[in-house]
Image (cartoon, rainbow, N blue to C red; front, side, top):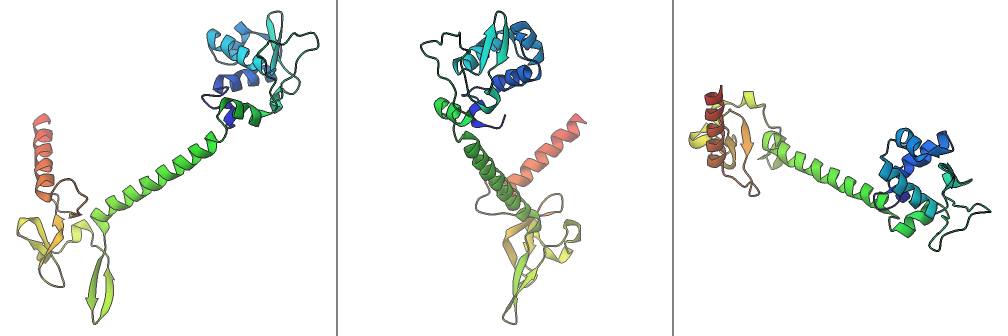
Length: 214
C-alpha cells in the first residue's frame, strides 16, 4: 500500500484492496468483491477496468482473477484475449507509478512530514521559552546560566508594579519578562502579536465569561 503506484492519483487504495481480495480468493464476481474488498459496486467496476488496462486482472464470464504475476506488478494477456487499443501491460509497480506520474510521491510526502514535525518541535520550543527560559548573568567576568524558577517559587522581591519583573542582578525591571495574572512568568518577545496588557485583558475577559457561564 505504501508504493507510489497505489497513490491517490495512481491506481488508488481500492486497487490494493481488490488485488488483496483476489489474492486471498480468486475468481470472484463484482458482487463478491464488494464485500471481500470493502468497496462500492461502482468503485469495483472502475478499479477492475483500470487493473485490466494494465493486464493485472482477467475476467472469465462474470468472475475476475489476478494475472499470473500481478502481485509483482507485471501485467499479462490471456492467449485468447484480444487486447484493447489502449491497453498497456504493466511492467512492475515502479513503471505503473511513472505512468501515472506518482513516482516519488511517498518520498516527497515523507520529507514534508519530517519538515512539519521539525516546525512543530520548533514551535513547542518557542512556547516553552515563555515559561522556562533560563537567564544569563555575568559574575566576575563569567557568564552564569541560571535556570528559570518554578512559577510558584517566584520571589516576591522580583515583582514590580505593572506586572513587571525585577532583574535579580541589576534590580531594574526587565523589559522582556512579565508576571501573568495567574502568577506565572511569561516572556514577551517581538514576535508576540499581543502585548502583556492585551494578554492580561483577554485573560480577565475569558475568566469573567467562564464565571458567568458557571
